[in-house]
Length: 76
Image (tube, rainbow, N blue to C red; front, side):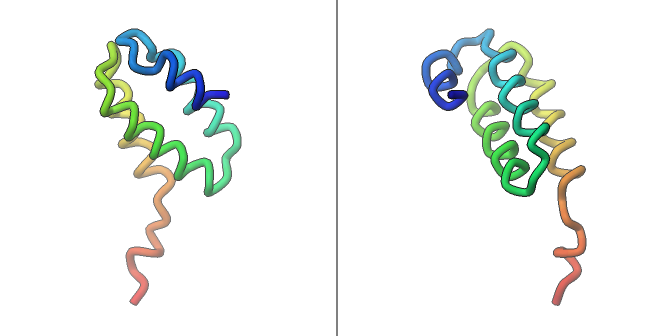
């Protein structure tokens, strides 16, 4: 449902609420797959000129630091 809505209206300059609702829905799912999807959606959003671009960038930075499994970085 969200994919279709984003394809139809996601390129509008004021489509921020639609994007935010999708990211919030993915956050509520809270599993590993949804975190990857969240990052993917935010990456796509940052490629789209929207009114609240800076806020979306901050959200992506927060998600990438909050959900990173740092133990993977130290594996040999």
